[in-house]
Image (cartoon, rainbow, N blue to C red; front, side, top):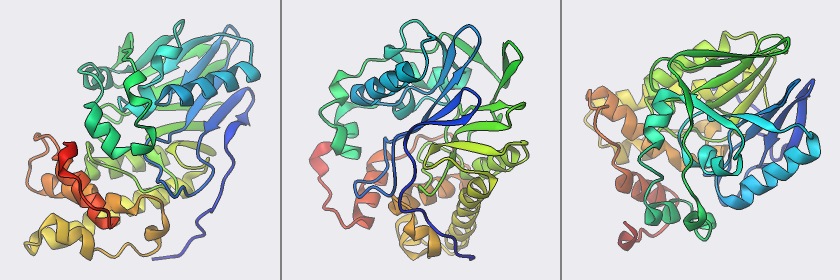
Length: 318
C-alpha cells in the first residue's frame, strides 16, 4: 500500500471554496475524542436566498453554524439539503425554521421514526451526552428519488442519489457543475475512517466510483478536510481493502470480531476512529450472507469498537 501524508490539522470554520460557495468544517485535525458526530456543512449563496447543506447535530454546533452563516451573508436560508438521515447531519434542522428542507425519500423515511434511543447515543458519543436530550426532530418537506436539479439564476445545483445504499439507504450528493464543486455528503470521508454500520460496503465502493467520475475539482466530504478526487479515492480504496480482506476471513470461517483484529490496516490505522473496522467488517459479513435486510446489531458493534479501543464495556447502558 502506498503511503500518504495524513494531515495532523486542517482548516476549519466557514471556508470559501468558490464564488459565494462555502464549506463549514467543524474539525481541525485528528481529535483524541474521535470524530463521531463531528460533521461538515455547506453554504451556497444565490440571487434570492441561500442554500445550506446539512444542519449538524447538537444545538451548540448548529448555533455556531447559524452564527457563521449570518456573518457570511445577509440573505435568508431558503433551502436546507440533508445529505442523509443521521442525526449528526439532521439534528439541527429545527434551527432553519424558514427553510424548505430537502432530502431523498429514503432519508426522510429513515429519519421519520426519530433519533436513536438516548442511552445509546450517550454511550456512542459521550462527549455530547448533555445536549442529546435538547434535540428535536424536524423532517424534510420535499423529497426526491434519484435526481433533483435546483436552479438559482445561472447557478445549478444537481442533487444525486446513488440508487442503492452506500453509507445509508438515502445518501445524497450536491454537485455544482459550472463551479466544479461537489458536496459529497457522507459518501466521502477524508482522513476519517468511514463507518458503514447502516451501510452496504460493496455498494458504497460503487457510489464512490461514480462520484469520482464527476468533473469536480473541489470535494467537501461529510467528515474530514476539504479535498479532491485523490482524497475520495483513498477512502474508496480503504473500503475495497476492508471488503476484500473480510471476504478472505469470512470464507475461512473466522468470526467477525477475530477478522477485525486480524486485518492489517497499514497506513489507514493513522486515520481517526480506526476501530470502525469492526462494524465495517460486520456489515461485509451480512453482505456475504445475503442478510442486508436484517438490522445491524448495534450493541455488538459498540462492544466490538470499545474492545478495539481497549475500553471496558458497560453492559448496563443498553
